Length: 193
Image (cartoon, rainbow, N blue to C red; front, side, top):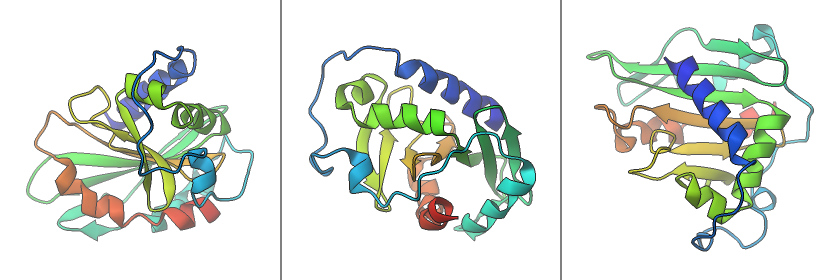
């Protein structure tokens, strides 16, 4: 299910940059007026896309193991395509089947498309995002009541790396429940490694 959700979001994001500007609200004033990528702590520029499991596995150490009863499952899920690779951690609580995911994406193409949306506040608004910063990095923030509510954080770390937090916004999990885990992700190490 998580790979499916990530794939659906990746496909939706792929179509976002093809859409025109539909007008809309001004940029969130908590974000500097310059390009959000220039206001963040961007990691080094790289060319990334197709990575194998062995290259992605070390990134697990930058994700918290146990926070507030949420436990990272022992093994990450991996996807490796021609121009995009992902490492996905699933978090569960002992007492129930509810879960959410943290996806680390390695892709110049996908990050470039995300960056284009970050640079276009009206396009972000059209797709159900606000523009902000998370941990000093530029981010798209899924707005409650929109189709992106289940993607509360899409954080750009460099020209080729991003982190997404995904959950079922219609289920029992709430953003307040998973926020403590999201706040413990070592974004700087993911950006710099």
